[in-house]
Length: 310
Image (cartoon, rainbow, N blue to C red; front, side, top):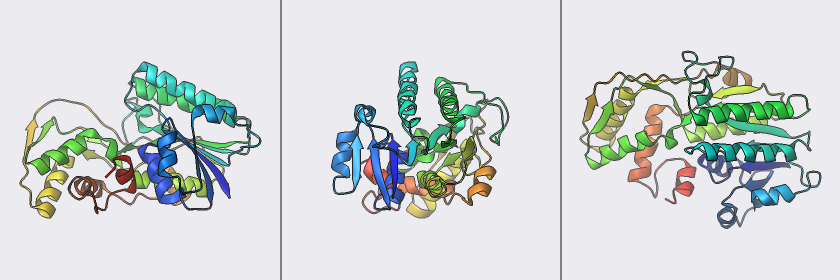
C-alpha cells in the first residue's frame, strides 16, 4: 500500500484527484491543508488523515515516511506576500521530505512559467520568461525542487499545468451571461488561450502515481496541446447554449489590439506515459452549463460538487 501526501488538499485539482482516483484505492492518504478540520469532516468515514502544516512539521520523517508527495498548494490570485508564503511553505515541505530519499515528489507548476519569451506551442526546453509575480514564483518553486532533489535518489518532476477551465473566471461569466440572456462581451477576440479540464489534470497526475517507479524527467507539460481564440470560445458558448438549451445568445465584440498567446506542446508527456486528454473545449463548456443549470445531476467533475457545495 502506497502512502501518499497531498498538499493543498482542499483545492480543485486535489479534490478531483482524491475523489476520482485515490479515495477507496490501495492507498493511505494524508491530506495537508489549512482547511484540515473541514477535510476531516468531509472524509471522516474513509481511511484518510487530515493534518495541518504544524502537524506535518512535528512528524518523525522516518516513522511517517511517504511513498509519494503531490504538491498542489500554492496561492493562485495573491500578492507578493502570498507568493512568498507559498515558497516558504514549499521550503518547509522540502526540508522534511529530503529526509526520506525513496519518496517520489510531484510539484504542480504552471504554463505561465513560459511567459512570452518565445511563441507557442511551448516545449519543455523552451526558455522561461515569467511576466508576473505568480509566474515568477512558480519558476522559483521549480528551482527549489530541482536544488532539493537533483543529487539525491528522490524521483521528482515539475508538472507545468495548463490553466484549468474551471478556474478561468471569464468562462463562467460567458456561460452565466448566456443563461441570463445577457450578451457575451469581448474586448479584442483574437487572444489565444489553452485550457485543461480538471478531470484530465487529475488523470495525468494519477498516471504519474501509477508510473512512480519510472525515472521522471525534470519537467512535463500537461495540457490539451490545443489553442482557442477568445472569439472561438465565445462562439462555442453560444452554439452550445442555443443548440442544447434553446437560449438566444448574442456576442458583442469591441475591437482592440490585445496580444495574448498561450499554449503548450504536450507531446513529451503523451509519448512518455501513453496519456491523452479526454475533454475538448466544447466539453469543458458543457460542464459549466451543467454545473449552473443542473447542479443536482449534471455531468460535471465531482470536484465541482464538493468544492462548490452543489
